[in-house]
Amino acid sequence: MHAVRCVAAAVFRESVRDRVFYNLVLFAVLLVGASILIGQLTAGQDVKIIKDLGLAATSVFGLFIAIFVGINLVSKEVDRRSIYPLLAKPVRRSELIFGKFCGLMLTLLVNVMVMTVALYAVLAFLSHGVPLSVQQAWDAPALDPALLKAIALIYLDLAVVTALALFFSSYSSPMLSAVFTLSLYVVGQFNTDLKQFDQIVSSPIAIAIGKAAYYVLPDFSKFDVKLAVVHGLPVTPGYMISTVAYAAAYVAALLLGATVIFSRRDFK
Amino acid sequence: MQAAIRTRNLTKDYQVGFWRPRPYRALDGLSIEVAPGDVFGFLGPNGAGKTTTLKLLMQLVFPTAGDAEILGRPVGDVGVRRRIGYLPENPYFYDHLTAEELLTYYAQLFGMSAPDRRRRVAAMLDRLGVGGERRLQLRKFSKGMLQRVGLAQALLNDPEVIFLDEPMSGLDPLGRRDVRALMLELRDQGRTIFFSSHILSDAEALCNKVAIVAKGRLAGNGRLADFQEFAVHGWELVVSGVSAATLDRVKPRVRRVTPITGDRFAIDLPADAHLEQLLAELTADGAKLVSLNPVRETLEDLFVRRVAAVGDGAREEATHARR
Image (cartoon, rainbow over all chains, first blue to last red; front, side, top):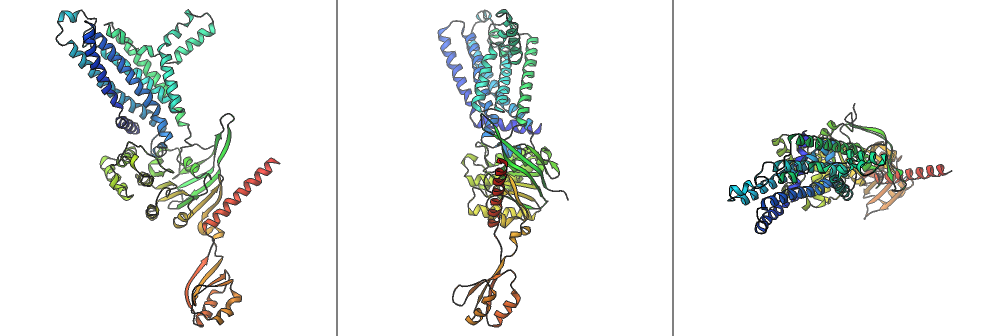
């Protein structure tokens, strides 16, 4: 675990040096700008729209970091041959993969936490001075703790994307890794449809393939509770636990796959 | 005695070609043994298999056949990496880190405590002459400075066995002199050094043992003195104050007499010349001895001949196979 910690800290430091956190400035500008604009255009809907916008931006900005930093975590080391002296140190290849994953997850955690604080700050500002009777008419309170559930699931979504990017980059070029990861992310949004393939087609083979694809491909729709949270609909603890377990299993499988491939790879 | 490095029939094939991949043998049945304390020169022309061998020893690539051990442990043993240092050819590190941060990162991987890290990192950077640039990002380093940082990281953990892939590459004459001095210092401390090079003068100055590889095969291996080509082939005698009559008398017993300046002459003698008798004769006639040197083949001559021999062998094998 010592080597994993060292590698993770190095990834985090590299993210800071590579100005990954500059996206937070853009996020803040987007949120503040939108709140001013929306406050003038809409009546009573501004809190809901800011919640929508804040959660969507947290997800999209995180997605870009997870994919574009994730695909370079390993391939950059290999392309630039900095992996040669690194692997001559007492580090297992599996520790390197796991350390890289943990380092990017730490970067994403800081990113998501700062965005969360910014979102709550803007919501607090917008709801400040609004009469209680008006607030009671909203679907959910402005500073709704349930927002944290949506944000936690966004973070899990990003963990699966990071593991996917790492898996592909363990054997393929950054460009191909980006295409594969992004493609699977898009496909994964509609994965639930594959489960219900039997309602659309009658061929048993097509149904079997659809079902198999459902279980193999990641189901990213599981992590999206933004709409429910914004409209004050409940997200049960049971749902949260099952989604965490799903993400953990999927990440573990991807990291195991990445480790197996990476451990056999020749660095010519 | 346990060997510091041992390879047995180490072989590596790479797949080349995209549509119809076929194996290309980069290393063919390499068996060598390096004793503790040896400075072992691994010599060969470009593409001979030197870097492939080092990558196999570092487990950066995996062998097609054969195996290798370092300090009695298989090369895959992570524990043995605590006891070795490695400088890759044309090393590249992280642009965004400073030299100090890079070495601190590696020191952490070795599990050094914070005070040890600080002390060792500073000592290594100072020793390699880049202490003044410790807080400069590596993207601003020249090739020679990166090579020095590479050497610093290779020695960071005070290794017992040090692997250096073309350590003089990218260094100016001053840098080469420093690295030579460093390697001699390490040798005197009893470290085992395995270094690849195609610069033969470095090997001649530093190594007590060498292996020559060509086209992936071992073309020669042993102590420099053990190579038959290094036996004395003759003598070069330089004398002054010798008379023409004396020279005429000794001429039938020497290969050649070459005037240098004035009354100074270089006399080329065969290996079996009766040196003592000739010297006594010359000095009795008033000649003064200026110098006497054995004539040997240089490592370069040996290298060219061995590499050519492997090339001929490979051609013969290929012809044989075609038949």
